[in-house]
Every structure is written in C-alpha cells, then in structure tokens.
Length: 177
Image 1: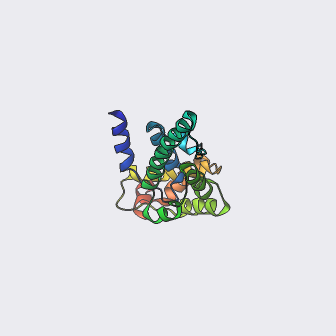
Image 2: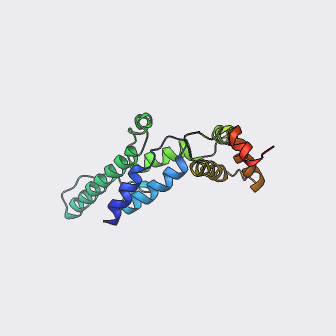
Image 3: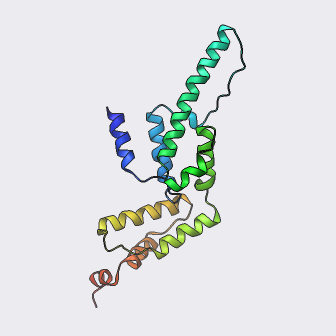
C-alpha cells in the first residue's frame, strides 16, 4: 500500500526534461528500488544458448523473467521522460543501456551544461505568479544543481542572487529609500 502511494506521489512530479536530471535521477533510483527493478539499471543478462537439459530450461526461464522485469524498468524510465525525449531513448535494448545513456547525456557536468546552469541562475527573475516561498524553492533548486556541478556559492552570493531576482517592487520593500 505504501509503495503505491509513493509511486502516485512520484507520478505527480515533473518528467525528465534534461535540465532536471539530478532530481529525476534520485526519484527514479528510489522508484525502481521500490519496484524491485533497480538491479536492471546495473546488470545485463544475455539469452542463454539453446539446450534440452533441465539446466538450459532453468537458464531460459531465468532470462525470460529478467527480460520481463527489464522491459518494465525501461517502460518506467520512458514514462517519466518528457515526450520529446522518449524517441531518443526508446531504442535502448536494456534499462541499463538507457540509464547509462541518460547519465552520459544529462548527468555529466559538461562545459555547456555548466554554462547553462550558471546563466539560468544569473538571469532568473521571480515570476509574478509565484509566491515568495515558491520563488525561493526554485532558487534553492538552482543552487543545489550548481553545487552538484561543483560550483559553490557563498552565502553572500546566494543572498545577492535572490535580491537581484526580485522585481523592482520587491526590492523597494526590502530596501526602502
């Protein structure tokens, strides 16, 4: 029962867009572990050779069971991707291959990704539709992503970024003239 609630909560979350890989990766690790599918992200099983022995039949049965769970793991990963990403990964033969390719594409801190994170953080402005709590949550997520990319911001830099991100009316409230 608790697992179904966890899965329902995860379903409400964002799908992988490429820019949210770090949190998506953590959620998928947790979800697939709860579904007892995590091993499919780290192992590959090959089809056993044909044979008529009892051992051959057991090996084939084990492979078919593994293969069915692997398809389930692949389906789960694809289900939690934004529609425009699915086509790039649906060709992966195994969940491990897909997981590894996703980590290669989105998990590393390439120069391009690092620049993108820094630029997004520096240019971010509070959306008038967001509450201050939501705004600070978004900024905290960006700070965490930068930290994961090994860009450490001092407390002063973080405060300055929050102030810079506020609309002029918010600045006037913080610093009346």
